[in-house]
Image (cartoon, rainbow, N blue to C red; front, side, top):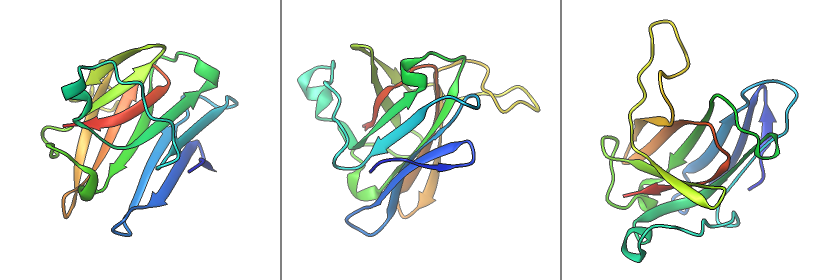
Length: 153
């Protein structure tokens, strides 16, 4: 699904097979820049630079993030919701994110830590994960790169 604007957030969402709202959201790192997000079954799948066995552990529909036509920023926030029916081998404590960009990739598994009174993590990339109940998860990811993201179990 294509993204929609909500303040400084750009959201793409769709109904899962269980009629659960699954979404991807990007919070723009600054005003007056182009930001788009796409997710759902029509979003482009990553190439997957992992081993074939590891690629089989990717789950969820791809979240395709574009900030400032590929620009790099000191950090921006992405929120991805996962329906329990698509989660493979992960829970709120073990969820990691496969992030592919510029013909390379990173595994985002570091939990974010924050300085008191700061909304920006101390180091990037990182993530926090919330259990939404019923096995559904929401990951908040901080990164400096555009690209495609999927869950990794």
